[in-house]
Image (tube, rainbow, N blue to C red; front, side, top):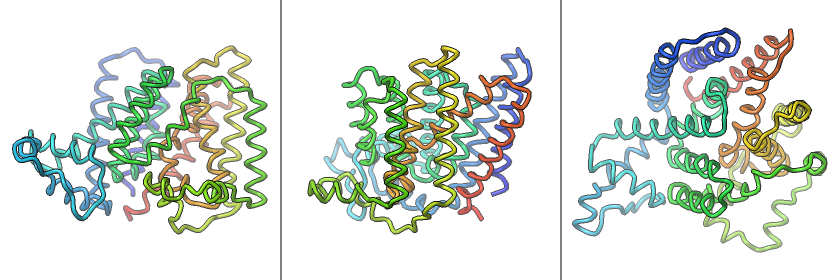
Length: 357
């Protein structure tokens, strides 16, 4: 727990100095990047010693045969005691052709995850120092470290977003991600996320979702039962996640977090619009950020969004806010907003990493 907080503090200090202190040394940036990578992997090794799913992934790695064995014998990818997607099994098999060591495989997966996220930030003109504190606090400690198949599927989603203007390519990459975790089919609904949507439509949907939440109208279960698609959805594991037993903290801290986040995101969007700084990159981040807030309101009666599916888009509201208050916002109270935002990340990390206690 303490170590994870120290790591987040390290990245927040980097963020503060990168945005508030003038510096020109590229050599220092490379050293910082290298040290950050080492620190994140030390944190990964520490956390994975606690995460309960890691032994299951070790069992998969040890059961699957090397790709050379599979080619020669025609079998070796089968798992008889687990339902694991073929893409993930194949990745294990190909890696074992080069090195039959599970710790090295975990390191390799970590390189993929960090590299794809870094590449995505660069493509979408997101300041990396603003994105990584959010990434660490919201997803790295549990999602990226412990849920390997879905975390790899998330990498495919980020890559797909880079080609969002080419819808066929986007869908193809999502289908590749499907071979690692079926839940990524959820991301097909984000085909529209590159569009510039009128704010009146966003506000209208927000009011409807708020009314559904306050009145406890469960339209999702009604919609699914009306179409009689439970079996088909079960194949995609959505029903599985919807049926996870978890208490609904009605009007709790999560509800107010979404309301406040929605308010600030739209305040920022209007301000950027006035300055003519809304572009295709930050518009997509805004759309995804708003969507996860609205979806969590609509899915109030099930843990689907609040457990697994939300991990695909949960970072976007706070990347959007972080980019603004650290890079765009100019005011005498700028540091005060930065401090409050960092305190939020520390609190989020604290609750995320309780399994380390």
